[in-house]
Image (cartoon, rainbow, N blue to C red; front, side, top):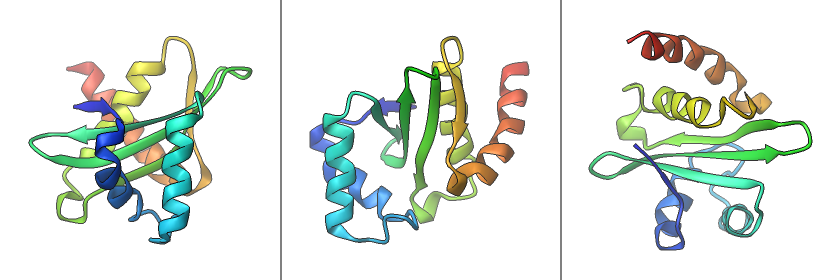
Amino acid sequence: MLIRYKKNLEKIAMGLLSFMPQEKKDVKKLLQTIKEYETNDGWHLYLWKDEDVLGAIGVKIKEVDKQVIIQHLSVTPSHRNLGIGKQMVHEIRKQYQDKYTVSATDEIQDFYDKSEDISDQIDEQ
């Protein structure tokens, strides 16, 4: 299930975001990204929690355009290929679909497109 990021989960969130190519395991860049999620009202970071925190998904909300853009998406390497990333995308789409158009950055677009298939299957159930 998706949970909203809180400061006490900072190290876990930074660890998950460090798997993203654009973050490049650069501690300074990771700290800047986390700070942006903590201080910018238009940035929202969610963590995927099963028994442990296994993934992170970050969005930027553009109120003017009524858009939600998925800009960060990461799953722990040992839990990849289990559908967690697709479930996170599905939950974000479900959460924001009534008021916003959901899309993804160029880096995430291919994965986002593949995730739409699972969203359709989940909605049919």
